[in-house]
Every structure is written in C-alpha cells, then in structure tokens.
Image: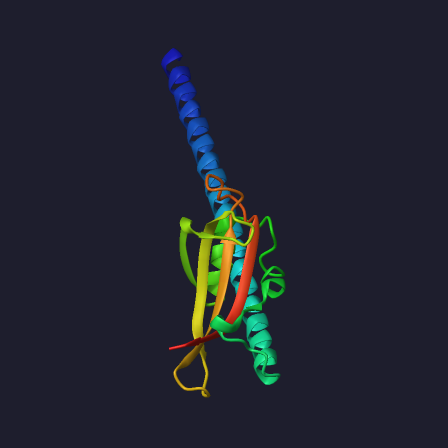
Length: 174
C-alpha cells in the first residue's frame, strides 16, 4: 500500500511539473509572439512614415521645379527641414530616424564626427548625412537633383535620439 501511495504521489508530481512546464512554455511563446508583433508594427509604422516623407519631398521638389526656384548647390540651397521634421521630429530615436530615411529611399551615411567641417556657429559637425540622388533633370543636361538630410545627436557620445536635423534639396551639375 505504501508503494502504491508513493507511486501515485510521484506520478502526481510529474503531472504537475509537466503541466507547469507546458504553461511556462506557452507563456514564453505568447510573450515572444507579442514582442515580435509589436516590432513588426513598429517597422511598418516607420516604413509608412518613410513613404509619406518621400511623397512630401516629391511634392516639394515638384513645387520648386514648377516655379523655377530649384537652386543649384553652388548657388545656395533650398532648405526643406520643415518638410522632413514633420516625419522625423526632434527627439526621435536615431535608429528609427535612419529607418524612416531608408524607407524614403535615402542612402543612409555613417555616423561621424567631422573634424574638418564646421557649422556657421563654429561648432564641429557630428551626425549622419543621408542622400537621395535620383531626381534627374532634363534641362540642363548632365545635372542631378540631390536631397540631403543631416541628423545630429546630442553629442559625440550620445546617439540615442536626434537632437537636430537639417535638410536641403538642390541641383548638382555632373
């Protein structure tokens, strides 16, 4: 009788342990699935913002081109920071900002501290410069329209969020 009670107790223990393991695995799977779904939703949102940014840049380009205000890079810049900041607000994570730019068709540059390039206020340029070079001009021939965005971190050691950004569009002669 003692042996039968011990066998029953062991069997119950194994059943309880098995049930706990199944529950634990199920809970872990649910959490992983939930996190993966949230990550996919975030990526889709960033892609959508990138597509919307590209559309806004295309509209800005067309408007400038239609009124013959598109400047060449040597003759000044068409500043479009106000267009870009709607889709990449200051405080956006740097990684998210670069994802948005990629989704908009930009070639995202490396993050850097440029010891030779200084801003108008005399500070060194720290950032990530991204470009689109696919707006072709028919007249004049051998020209290209470039769109550039400079994302700046808070400082050279803190690339967590975008602290400032500048964007421009203009003609480059080849």
